[in-house]
Amino acid sequence: MNTNSDVYKGVHISNLNDTCLRCLCHVAGCDLAHGCSQGYCGPFYISRVYWADAGKPTLPEDNPQRKEAYDDCARDYHCSTKIVESYLARFGKDCNSDGVTDCYDYMMINHHGGNGCSEPLHLTSLGKLRLQLYQQCRL
Image 1 (cartoon, helix red, strand yellow):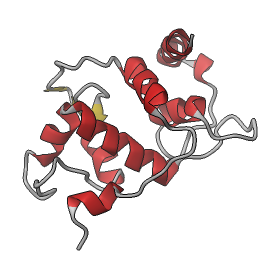
Image 2 (cartoon, helix red, strand yellow; image 1 turned 135 degrees about the vertical axis):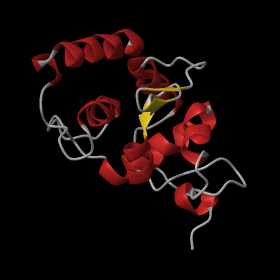
Image 3 (cartoon, one colour; image 1 turned 30 degrees about the vertical axis):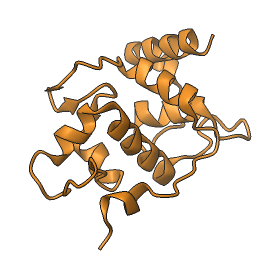
Image 4 (tube, helix red, strand yellow; image 1 turned 135 degrees about the horizontal axis):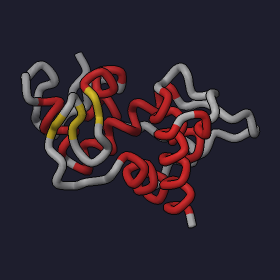
């Protein structure tokens, strides 16, 4: 059985660095005080399904089977970055077919979900907003 540290131990995702994580958080709202509401928790507004797809990372010494493990990890910035890293390790790909998997692709994956990231962002108002927030952050 994997322990918490085994879930994301040694995970390296090309082009996912602290700057990119900050921008992904910015696009999501990055409210460090956000608890859980409407099915989303923490600064990255992570859903329980996203957490499960990421392998259920937890705070150190926690158990993913504990009822509050998802909430507690998703509300903690450091732990929530582990959720994002693990999710992107699983679903990361070149969404816009520019030949490189980079932060823009990761932002598209977070917007569309792991398997549907090739759809352009400008087609919806939420997609346009996220694109604008991403561009602001990258400046």
